Structures are given as structure tokens and as C-alpha cells.
Length: 140
Ligand SMILES: [Zn+2]
Image 1 (cartoon, rainbow, N blue to C red):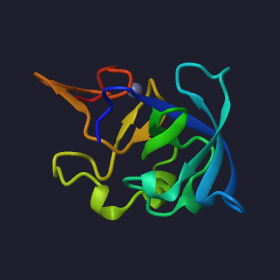
Image 2: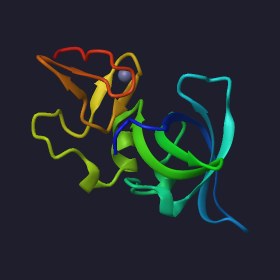
Image 3: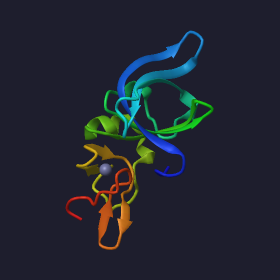
């Protein structure tokens, strides 16, 4: 899972429903692209497209998602981050937590994004940077 290609970062505004009569196992959210808070849209995400989600009931307002769309539908989805570290920890599977022992626990914090991000930061000589906004991380 990397922030690259035609993937987009969305922020959940509200979790609307779990499942549905005709939609099978899904979660429905109101969400907006991280860079465009005016473009809120309703997304219905099938359970099988998630790659690191532990429990969809732990998605919440503020969860950052990395999404790939295909023909208007969400074709791949990952939990990318959350403003609250514990909420992020609850949402993602343990085995998807970075095995890199040099990282501080499960995620790094980006002040510019105001998110804990469940990825390894970008590395450049002598520093780390945020995978989303590319801001150098404090303390590195
Ligand atoms: Zn950032």
C-alpha cells in the first residue's frame, strides 16, 4: 500500500450505514477528498475491497482513507490515518502495522495533515517526510 498512482486520499465526514438490503456487506460513508472539503460525496465501500481494515465498525469521522476508483466505484480501500492514534490503532489489523523497529509504534504523526498515518514516512537523506503532503516531519 503506497500513496501513489491514481489513488486519492479521502476523509470521512460521517459513517452513514453498515450493510444494506441490496448492497451486501458494505459500509457507507460521507467523505471528501483531503484537498477539497467542498466535494463531499457518499461512498459505498464493499467489504472485500479493504486491504488493512480490522473492523469497519471502528471507522469514524476523521478517518483518512486511501481509495482507488474504477468506473465511479471504490475498487481498493485502505485505512490511511486518523487524528486520534488510538482510533487508528483500533481500525487497522495488527499485521499491517509497520514492522520497522525504527518507527515510533504504529504510525507517524504529521502536523500539517493533523493525522496519525499508518505508513512508513518517505525517507530522504537525513530526514523523514509525510507520504501525503511531503512535509518534513518534526524531530527528524
Ligand atoms: Zn502530512
